[in-house]
Image (cartoon, rainbow, N blue to C red):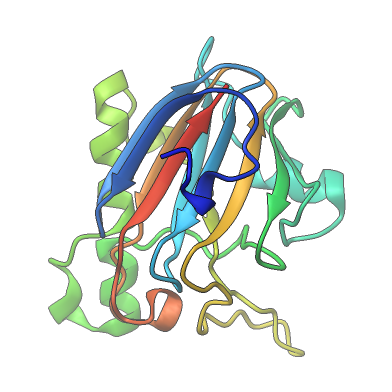
Length: 211
């Protein structure tokens, strides 16, 4: 693993290294100061992302506080992910793509049915993944909040409409985050096949945690 270029430049010892299958959930607790690298292994894969404070999960990632504090709806290198108490939870310390989405949300059976037709209702969704992961720590649907979509391309058109278009990632590109408090990271490796956020073909991602 030490010769793997996808972990080159990561400081500190390796704590956890896992391939998350296409369409699957992932959850991991991180200590303040630890780093997470997300690797888009095959390119064009959206990674839906939530954060909860480990000490008290009533404190969790807040898209509103994050966007308001930075005055921008996109996340870039240097963006601070803030909680519903306005406190820093994680910081994006490096990103191989220009920006990441804060407002596209997570696909669900309801949104799939509305957007793409009733025949999609039974398809697995990011909401299902978040619920599957969160139930392990006693969280339910009420504990879900607006999520981040790493590598997802959601441009705002001139008329204010949102688009979901081909991603801006490529195989092996990464985003690095540093935990500013003890956090629980919950991920849905997005299973969406009805729009181009995954190139209509969900693929695995790699999650690397270092101290």
